[in-house]
Length: 127
Image 1: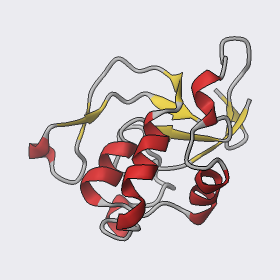
Image 2: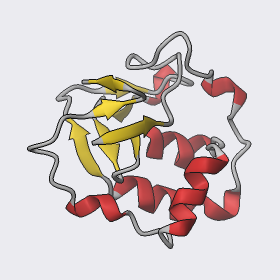
Image 3: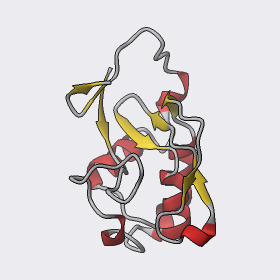
Image 4: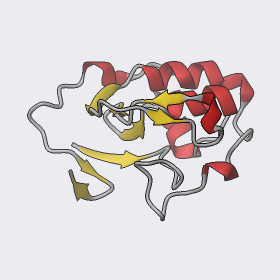
C-alpha cells in the first residue's frame, strides 16, 4: 500500500530533519473544523504499532500526547498524536489532506483496512 505522510514534525521523536516545524502551524487551523478533523484522525487504522508514549513537544509539562504509533485512511499516514495537537493547539494541516477528509465526508474509510498482507510504502520508501 502506497501512503503519503502527513503531520510528522521535526520536533517529534518519529520526525525527520526535513519535516516542517510544528511551531509554524500552531493556532493556524480552522477552529470550525477541529472536531471533524479529530474524529477523522481518531478513526484511522493503525498501520505502525508502537507501544510507547510520546510527550507533548510544545509543552513537555503537559505530559503524554500519544503512543508513537501511526494511523492511515488508505491514502495518508499520520502519527497517532496528531489528533492531540489538532485538538490542543489547533495546528493547521495541508489542504491536500483536508480535501481528502472533505471528499470522504469526514468519515475515515481506513477503519476497515486489512494491512496484514501488504507492504507499506510511505513517501516512496518501503517500511
